[in-house]
Image (cartoon, rainbow, N blue to C red; front, side, top):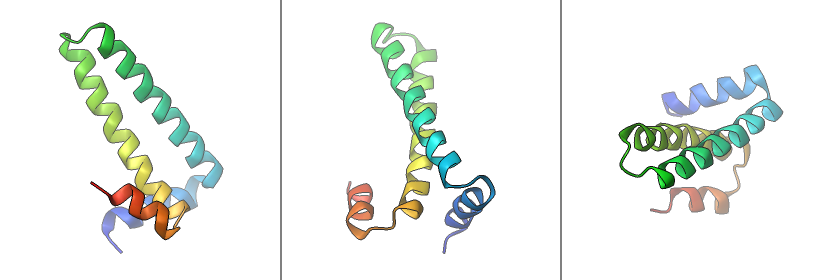
Length: 81
């Protein structure tokens, strides 16, 4: 198990599945909002930076989803380039 996976597991144990699923929803909503602001202001670097930041947050959430939903098909979908 990687160090990152251990960290994700500890977060799930500490805060619980429901809380972490709520966090996934929140982070996805923040990414949606960042993308919408960027679309209205594509030349503003702060909006681009916010899209990048929120994308990373969603990616971290996806790692927890892989642990919560260990189904092989789901994992293959996430890991497909």
